[in-house]
Image (tube, rainbow, N blue to C red):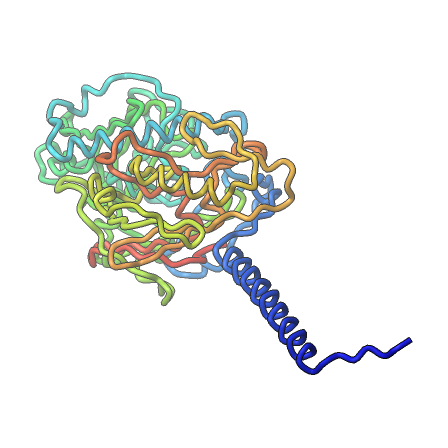
Length: 482
């Protein structure tokens, strides 16, 4: 058989062709690797079992080493005494969402009144409608403080959307709902005293409650919530104990004698709003109007509520607080944009400015202008197209069925605020989980673009949120608590 002779020209051409093919293949692999890297960089890998609630409390301790700090627990989680002693009344997911809708409606109504479109003087503290509202969207997180001398520990919901602090008081002249702690007895405290009717302090109640105070031997306050539940009682002053080193004399609060339908076991509420009767304002001499909190990633963990400059992380990014209306105690924020999976959504700035927005510790689901929500939902669905969708609920319409998966890749979501500040939402802040077969995007649309937007507590999970009220700014830092 003869020998085949390959010409140098053919060999060169062949080698060049092989080189080109290898380069093309390598470039393709590089492009795929780059795309994969980009996808992983802008997504969370979530173990599906981690979406289910745990029945075991795993308390954090590091933040309680800071002075002026209180432990924060979810009132329906295993770390809460309310949960352990009242399991029969833990609300269903449907009830939680219904409560949340009631709270949002209440906020919208309160803002309408504060803007002057409703006359608060038409309501007074002795004329509130009697209705036993067993559910109200009034906050999910509780802390324990001391009241009176000697001090009595009380479990109170903390709420940035409210100003006045109040608790139920004996003898419950009207009625008291069932609470875990013994009802506070003013007669057993040596430092309790009522506020007189004609005092400037009594008159200041109208701005904090939206309801004109009345007189019945002493100053009478009244406050009403979204489902027409209410608290009425004497406006008083007492010694408040946050920690052994943080004791405040003559703290102004509501001593509720007629309380209906509120809070499911909590003794009352701590008001952290912007009014001069709120706790931050009353303690401003010591804390300089600064407080911060971190809401835990799940109800089986704990977070913290701290007062004063407790050495906030250097990674805190600050934005300027805005004023929603001249008579509003809500903390206004300027949202400028949203990204999904690293992709900035095409939403006109006017969409966010039309109604403005607030941050609220008591609202569960973030509310967005319909135009912004539509863009968010559409892009999220696009990037989650590999997963089967699940039926929508009344409030949440972007839901998934993860029953066939052990882990899922979920696009990261970030919010952008004034000054170009980007705040990434933790993986735990993206979904509201009704079951593994119905895991829903934890955002909802308002009725109109002109309705106030609300940055809710689900999206705040694990963020350290710093309120510098005196400085007129709000800060965010990731990884505040785990």
